[in-house]
Image (cartoon, rainbow, N blue to C red; front, side, top):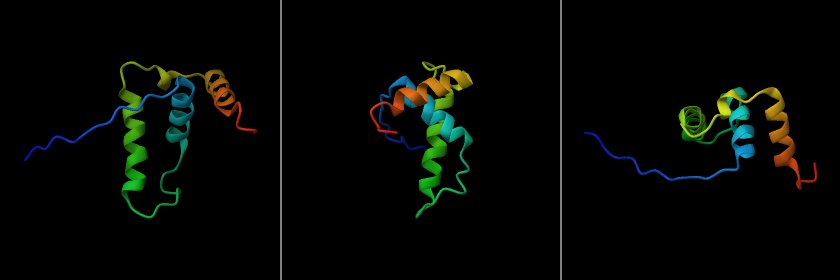
Length: 79
């Protein structure tokens, strides 16, 4: 039986998306503390959505673009 899974749309600043993608692509989800298995699956699903979302080019971000995005996101955080 096929079921339609409800979806949500989340709008991110491009810099946030770059930082998030870079982190998700490099993090060992087996090392991230979880209390329930879907807490590991949801970030993996988010990574896959960021990879195939047609209206972004974040998967091809250069090291310089990632560093600039990290700086932009960090502004105002006091870091």
